[in-house]
Length: 235
Image (cartoon, rainbow, N blue to C red; front, top):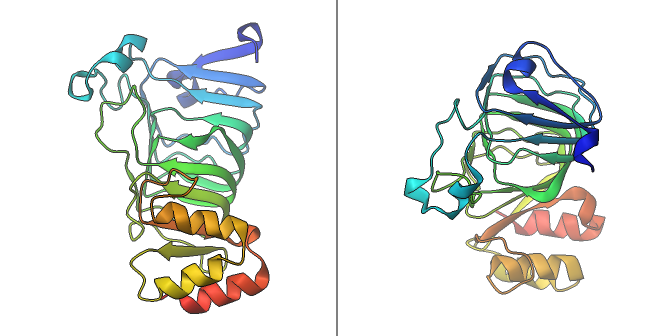
């Protein structure tokens, strides 16, 4: 990506109907309410905040930034059909937004943006993380009330409450260390390298920095027989 090839627009431009293609950086902060951003196709998309880069050096209580002003807020916007192989929402807030039938890959593999009461389907390749970005004045990232029915590729980490969001029983399986059958789950996971890493990470000594005592498995990453046995074991 080169800056000379990047289209820079503001959040006010999005509110007014701008939908540039290619590499797009949105900056300036602000509120976008009820915008139809559906079927947007971009190769790179970044939702920048309007805070100073120096704010990353300040203690969290002293970081500047008001939601809907310096920190972008998308309220009841429709991102359905968004196609983006490099998406970085940074510290934006999304409330009651639609991300249906999307094809998204997170630019850094993880998003520390806030999502509340949103709906997702399609492919979202990356993790939602409750640990705040260095620029975010919030103590925790909000990821709650979201419906992930029909959404493939998601991961959640950093201390998100697994009961606070809706998963798809046909696509997702929550492995929780507090499950009464955890011993059986561990035994099944020993038969597969990926599952072994997930379980050990849930227990706090594996390669994935989950930062919590549970993980959501994606159906596409687990062999059929193991999926069936884990489904039976989980309560």
